[in-house]
Length: 388
Image (cartoon, rainbow, N blue to C red; front, top):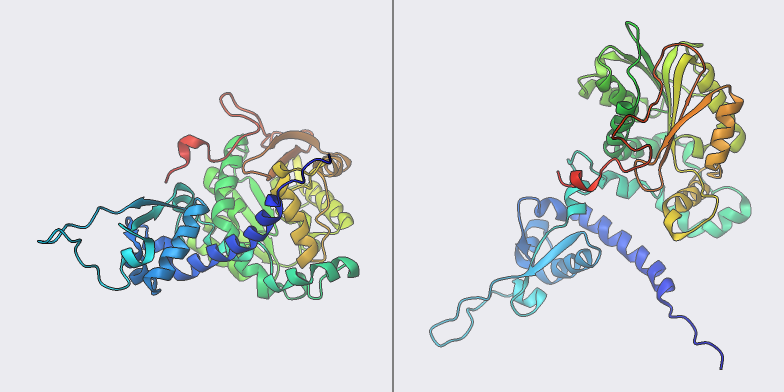
């Protein structure tokens, strides 16, 4: 007999992915996570906090529990009346929304760490922006046939990139701070950190915070540079950061003058030739002993469920930009060597994200070193630091 067919679970998971995403966006739009920040609520209390009736609030909360973003526990049984009957619950209260006894909902650890708008590691803005313009996805098949989306984000960078820059800043600031701690502090009176495609400057500002004697240069597009300036103005280290408006392909850079040059999540938006040339340009700006830091999501050599983040990140680039999103970690290493750099440690601070370091030979500027007790590969947020 022929073998039994597999279950359609994998197909359902894809369909559920669409549903999960929009459930999360709805929760963010309603302020549901902030409503639970001060403590658990039943469906009725949650409904009152977010302006939705108890039945609908309960169903959305149940979905978030299934997604492991909330937890739920039964409420205490209502006190009995004189005749032994349960106390009456007003219409629309938790009993109507969540069955006998109702439920009390609370933030899960992931939501508490990453989905509160003002959280130190907040990804609340990023949830909306990370897929790129939503309208590009339904036309993906035609985009693949045509070779480019009908509208690329770089055609109007001011419409999309400012919000993306703000959305990525909190989580990337944590990553950047961890990488900065891995580098030996630069010697000299005023080490220079150059951040190309800085966005809200999480990388430059993290290095300036780690190195009090350093100064920084952040380069960002004219349509986005106001975000960089806002971030610098709000940061204690921002008075040491010079911000320049322009393309990182054309802005004049200090020749052999930088101790660190950062390419933070910009290479995948470039065609392969453009990415290679940008690595070479960054390398030329390094002084002897200076370090190139590249953070990105290289395409995996072999696709697998373990590489979902990197694979879908590359597809996002094809769906929304003129970039190719196609370079591998081996390509990046080859470009660095071709630019005259010596490869240093590679870090994986978050799932799928690669931080490559490479140093220009000579000099006494910072060199990446795997210090005792720190793993070259590991999470920025190990389990012991998973709670705020």
